Image 1: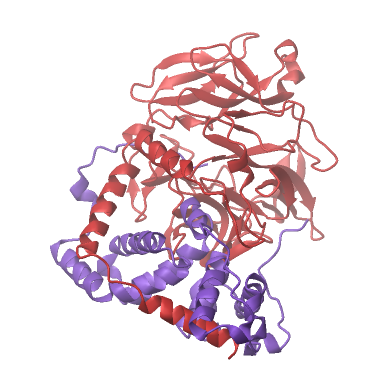
Image 2: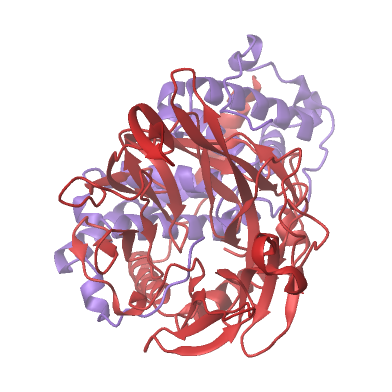
Length: 202
Length: 408
C-alpha cells in the first residue's frame, strides 16, 4: 500500500522545475487556449461549470509539471482532460460527474418539441451518462475525431469505442423517451461487435 | 434528424454558451500546484483533512445503472472486523486502512519441467463489499480503493490494466515497453512503480537446476532489468536500468527483487545482499543514499507510520512472549512493544495491523496459526480483525494480505 508523504526538508524552490520563461509561456498558453479547453471540460463534466474548472485546473497542473518538455501542449492537456475524466480511480471526479439534480423533464412528443427544447432534453440526458460514455460522445461528436483516434487517446480498442458509442446513444434514448422519434445514428444501424476490455469473471 | 446529429448540436450549443475563464487562471493553477506540492511532502495531517472535507459533501449517486456507491463508502465504521472469516469474505478495515485484497500462492508444475509460483487473488468488489476471486497474475490497489492496477497472463506483462473496482472491468490498458512483474501505486496514487524483468521472476527453470535437500529441482534465474515510473493519467512510462544485486560470483538471493516506493514517494528502493542491504534510486534513475527518514526502517512490512514518526519494527518477543517493537524513526530507538507477531500496516498514527497467534497456542507450530489483529500503541488492547489463517477449498493455501488506504 502507499504511505503518506512527509517533509523532506528541501526548500520548495528546488522542487519547482518551471523557470520564469516557462511560467511566462504557460501563462500565454492558458490565456490563449483556456476558453477552448474549458468548453471541452464543461461538456466532459456534463455541464457542471465548477467541476469543469477543477478538471481543467488539474490537467493544467499536470502539464505545468513538465511544461518545458512538452512539444504540443494543447494535445497533451486535452489527453489528460479526457483520461482524467474517464479514470474512475480518483474519488472526486467520479462523484462530481453524478451530481445531477433532476432527471431531464419530459417535454412531450418529439413532433411537438421545438429544436431548442430537444437540445435541452439531450443536454440533461448527456449529464446523466457515465463519464466514460459522455467522454466518448464528446470525442466523437464534438471533437469530430475518428474512432481510431478516440481509441488512441483513451487507451482502449476501436471496438470498445464503437460499443461504448452504441451503448451511450441507446442510453440517451432510454433516459429521454422524447428522443425516440429521432432517426437512428449510423453507429446504431449495424450490429456492433463488443471488444470490451478483459472482464474479471472467475 | 438523427440522434447523433442532435448530440452534436446539443454539445456545440452548450460549449458556445460558456463565458470565458476569469483572468489570472494560469496564476491560480500555478498557485494550487505549489500548494499541492507542499501538501504532498508535508505530513499527513493536511492531506487527511482535505480528504475528509471532500468526503463530507458527497451527494447520493444517481443516474446510470453502472453507478453504485462503493462499499467502502457505505460502511465507514472505524473498525470493520470479521473474526469468523478466514480467508476473509467481507471487507475488513481499521482506521484509514483496509484489506483491499489477499492472495494465496500455488506452485504450478509445467510440462517442460519448470514450475511457476502463481498467485490467486481475492479482490474487494466495491459493488458488494465482498472479496471476489480474480484471475490476475499480480495486482495492487490505489489509495481510495476505486482502482486496482492489474497484470495478466504469464509475467512479465506487456501492459498494465487499470481496473474499476466497482465494475470489475479494466477501464484502460497502459502499454509498457519493458515487461512488468510488479506494480505499486505511489503514495498519492498518481504514479505506478513497475519492476521490470526479462523473464518471469516467479518461474523456476528446469535448465537452471538448484539443489534442494540434495535433490535437483528447477531453479531461479535473475532477470530484473530495472524499474519504470508510469504516470497514471497520461500513461507515460520512464524506464531506468537497474539489474538486481549479485555478488562477485554471480550469486543472487531471489529471482524476484521488486522495487517499492519510499514513504514520501520521492525515491524507490529494493533489497540487496550487502550493507546497507537496501538500494535507493530517485525517480530519474540515479542512485541515492538511504533517506534519513528511512534509515531505521526494518524488514517488517508496516514501515513508517503515516506521520513518519514511528516505525513498525521486528519481532521482539523473548521466551514465550509474542511482541514486536515500535521504533522512533528519528533515533532508531525502541519506543515500546506491541503484542503482535508481524507488523503489517499502520491503521493510523497510533494503531497498527499485525498477524497475531492465539496466545494460548502460540508455541511451536501454533505460531503459524495466526489472524489479523489491530494493536494500539501504549495499550494491551487487541482487536481481532479476521479468523485464524487456514487453507480453504476456494483458496487452497495460506492467504497473504494486500492493504490499501481507505480514503483517497
